[in-house]
Length: 71
Image (cartoon, rainbow, N blue to C red; front, side):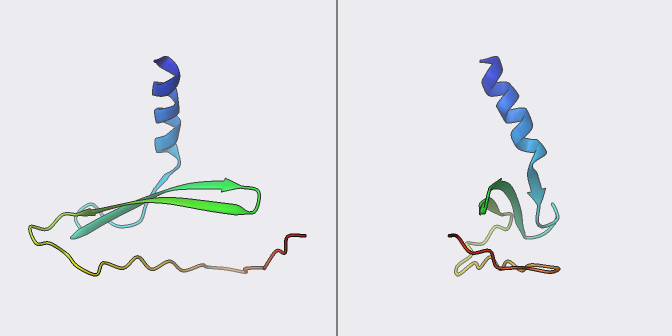
């Protein structure tokens, strides 16, 4: 039981807020980097009273990006 609570505590240290709390659509992401792999677990919450259709998540990189070949 204590281990799962401890894992949950560290999980929230690695969550990055992508939008503001007052935005109509709230998004946050947990980023997991393992060698050359980057995994994003994204939570998107509709905070409006309407049903949203065709919601798109657009990601962009910043800075110098180098392609790394595997083997």
